[in-house]
Length: 394
Image (cartoon, rainbow, N blue to C red; front, top):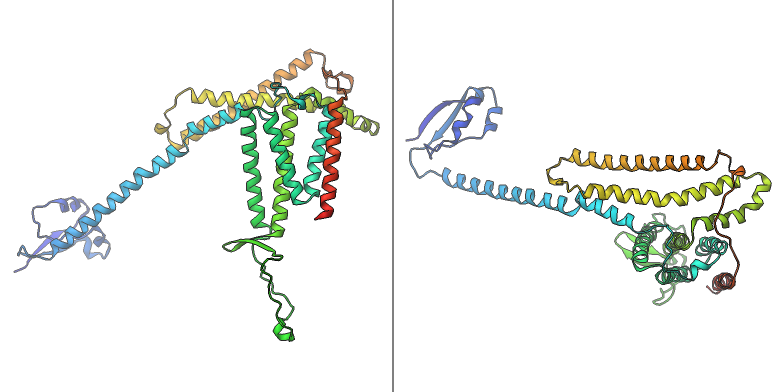
């Protein structure tokens, strides 16, 4: 005969459900107290006096499901912190910043000395202007040819640790631009239908499509398509970005700030006739090129200062880690402003009173036109002629 046990239901009586004195008793979940007001007063639990009750298999299956869910949760809890902390840890980010700032970016490298170091800076500026115009005005073969020539020149002129780092970053950026514009400029098919009726309506036989002729669509990737228009836009933008960044890097790596300032002064002399503030522009450029080294050194030294503290990042909370990075950025700006104040005090101590036209700027180097400069200009004319000739052929 089944036994009926009437037990009071109260929030304080919930822990009593963990007792195992009566294995044949069926325990209801705590969610049953939300079914009505009467459930808050009493709980009716029916248990059979016979040991052969069907409740035992359900309890074992529910315990098996609970243990399986607990094991899955434990696996996820053990996997997520390892991926988050071990993959992108704050220490690795700081080491990456210090390593990237250690490589000279847009800084003069005096050794090994190559033929680009002896080229006149005015010729270099003319080459820079040409490398900005040529990728945008030439065909696709000329664009990729200029990119290949710049890459080979960088590998020949720059040291190994410099060109590997610079070419890797510029190539990655240009590749991302090429992929995004190649599939994004003309990637989505047009939803507008043509107003021309099909050939069957006009009574004209269908023209068979050529198997090896012209094809506007080059490649399809799901709903996106890589067309000839996308190839033209992507190649122009990617090659132009690569040419601008890498040519500027080559010029700054093989030319001192004083030489660049003197070359720009020579080109801007006619602008003084119309009242352009040429001395202020030259002085600003000279200070900016000198200040780049201080910025990279400060970023690297501040990152190394945090890394050498050997901070246990696993014991820090998220807000504490963010606070350390905010202090890192704050320290960088504070030190940079301190360097700027020291430079201004040094300029005042040397007689500068805020008027660049009355203050003589010493460039410490005089430009001279030689055989290497003439050969560089001849190469530039040959490249421009080849670009115009190839544009007529295609």
